[in-house]
Length: 194
Image (cartoon, rainbow, N blue to C red):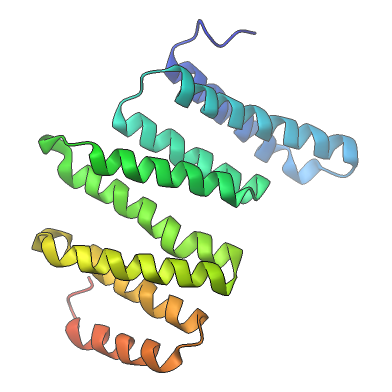
């Protein structure tokens, strides 16, 4: 079957169908043949998403949605963290450079979701001091960026301050983590979180 004649939403839903079928029958996997079938369905879901990204002119929202699903499959099913990080990095740059006033808040949230995955999820999955150090440095840079954004985005700053504490714990900097956590807690009196 050729995907070239199908609209992007059909290719996108086809990816979902492949993935749904894989998960629906995952509990039945009892031998190598069934495992191959499972991974064939996952592979087809990935190929549909990759095809949609490369062969269609996508809106920023479509690109974001498809990339996030690609990253999720790559991380959870193939453990190809390098490729997942490449997709995330590329998406972050496109979100940074995409300037549409009407959807600034949405673009900012999408970008922060990418940052969250890059600075927290990926380093935890890699579980290496090298990756924790890179994430910590990038998190500190992001926290400096928050000094120049409006008050409506400060909830994200709190998220990344907490991530910075977690990264310091992973790096064995317990004293710094404790100090930063206490500072974070003192700045967020009861009622500010919810």
